[in-house]
Length: 305
Ligand SMILES: Nc1ncnc2c1ncn2[C@@H]1O[C@H](COP(=O)(O)OP(=O)(O)O)[C@@H](O)[C@H]1O
Ligand SMILES: [Mg+2]
View 1 (tube, helix red, strand yellow):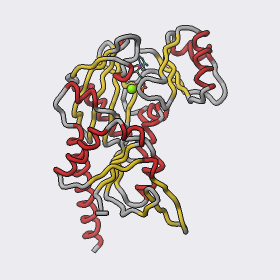
View 2: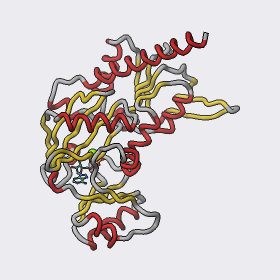
View 3: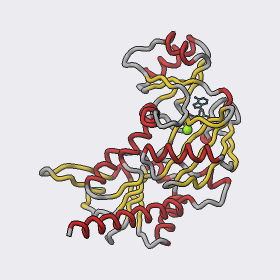
View 4: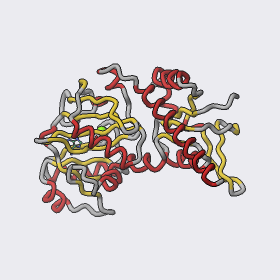
């Protein structure tokens, strides 16, 4: 098999429903002179043999590419690739920091980014009185690794709080508790960041309920970001170390607060509302990053001489 410049990595399940995006990425890469191909996440076997890291794909020893583009979370696999010298988008560290919502809030705190008050779950201890007296009702409960709004709930009183938390804990989820931003009920902004630019943004509006996720059946429209909102989105993705990010912002009276950051954002909403070529922008960013890195290596080598 010809040596590839890049591996485009999807989980098996997501590869089966993203055929158009996959071909789009491969085409955009080819236009830039980069050969990439689809690789299924589950088929990688990573190992350490005789103290050396090794990777096999579907039982075969592969020639390593220059980069890997992950379209799913797997930071251990990403870390392994990085240790083998493959440049990974998004980096393993940034992936890890964005997968867990509580961890994301911690990393972003202290940087002047407004976020809703958030209480982290204590080990085996739930002080409903204290949490609700700080956040007030209704309050938001989130599974820390949920996606698409599937682990986000609003509770109105102690009974609902206790019942919802018990159900989520029985199902094994780690939780966080958050102040409900009522001014943003059923609507939010999704800003799509690539490198240090917002390449597109949409306003998402729910058909029913407080969750604005498109995957919950809401609608979306193109949205011109204010300078302030764009700055929050770019700053957050930069602090997390992300090359590609979907940043969710909630509306407050005179601006926005950051809701969460996705390291693996779907681009259906941008596709449906604009002419932005997301795979093209991502591949251009990757090519530029590879060139910068190659340049740095040359500089480092020549300065060692
Ligand atoms: N603190 C909050 N106040 C008001 N609405 C919220 C809050 N947190 C989340 N939401 C709503 O719920 C949706 C899903 O929450 P989010 O944290 O983005 O989780 P997910 O990763 O599942 O998308 C958001 O898009 C927003 O509409
Ligand atoms: Mg979200």
